[in-house]
Image (cartoon, rainbow, N blue to C red; front, side, top):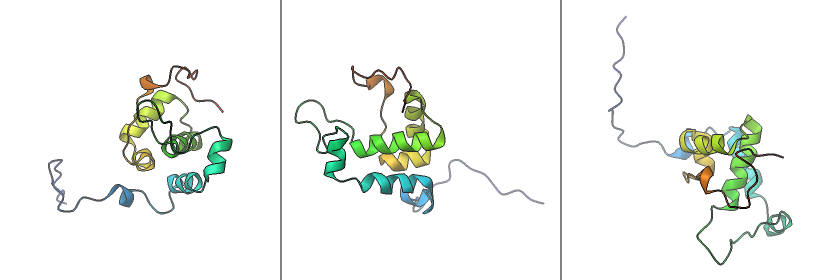
Length: 119
């Protein structure tokens, strides 16, 4: 039986979008729906400024951070460094963050997670 040719240099005429790579029933979509359903009062109750802080460098969007954190708990990924790696090379995490890749070493000075996320 002949083998199909395999080439990593194969170009796509129309590459799939990130949205097409995550199935409609994927758990990451459930997490995104849940986080997107939070209103301004919910974010305020969590102690998060939904519009960001007026001073300083632009921060990562709270929706992306909460989505990654919740999906990480669902899949057993609790380490900041493992979440960082997942956001760089796993399609569901890339979809949740809309391809925005954070860095664990850039955690705020007050972060006491020590590389681990805890409940």
